[in-house]
Image (tube, rainbow, N blue to C red):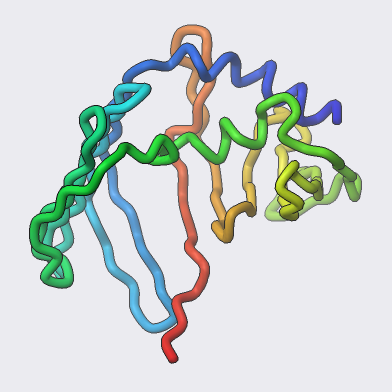
Length: 183
């Protein structure tokens, strides 16, 4: 679909990004609680990352991967130290953007047209990926940049875009996880 191709062209070739560092704040919401975190995230593709999450309410967690091992350490939920085999290449803040803008990701797409919400014109797109999963996207009608993606059970919002070199990336990526249920 033209809007996805336009967004991919506007953002640029994300495969050119080999290393990045992010620092910021994050809110994790569950059905019963909200936890505020400060985070630091470092990614060196293809197989190195590290991150720290610090919360006054629940503690500190660290994780990272170098090559074929991933480590976890912290006092969040009495996590303790753990080392497991393998790096998870999906541990990337920009992975949802990379996925939905990749050629061939969608097997079908449809749009419901342009609508106005919060004073902005938006385009809503519904698609199906090769795995048969439904993916919902929202684009800014004026800029053509993605604003929201609902995929893999997550609601991911993109904002505050900035051009750095040959790519344009959102400086704000907000993840909302699906509700956690206990039985």
